[in-house]
Length: 202
Image 1 (cartoon, one colour):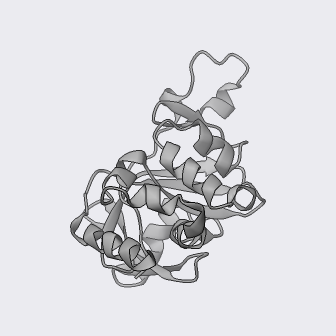
Image 2 (tube, one colour):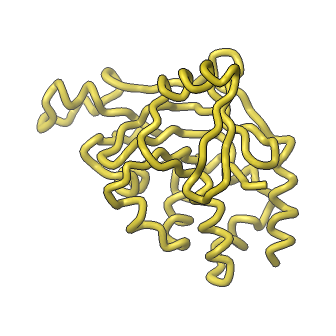
Image 3 (tube, rainbow, N blue to C red):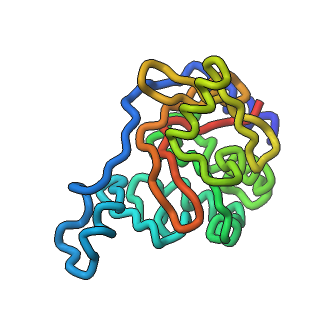
């Protein structure tokens, strides 16, 4: 079963999109929320049309995002809710539902089976880096590294960050690239960077 899963993952190697990296703040805050001060509103990012409050943790905000339902279901199935709701801090490269949809048919359903929980945990923790790594920090690391930066994930394996034009791309262990489409979504226990492909260890 594990070999079939990894074989399916390998098919992802040719999938790499390049869309503009951006962080949405200020004007995108919920205008109708009169309980929020203007100072707090200016710090609230919108992801998929939902407000991501910096006073809420990674799990709470991700659960409110309409474009991260598969990720949330996967975190629950993997038993990682308490970890990602903990103090951290964590940097999470968060694949959208569309990113999961690019996986070969049946892959997600297979990973969500109880007997594959270990494999699912490995994939999800490959998207998490200890500490808070903001986009500016990552760009600085890439420049200091002569065009690339190595990130060690909670999984224990590494990711490579590079610039593609003005975009930050994250390259996984299979050489597949995922573009950061929305950066610096602040959380109470870290930061989320939205990405457009699922990252897979080699």
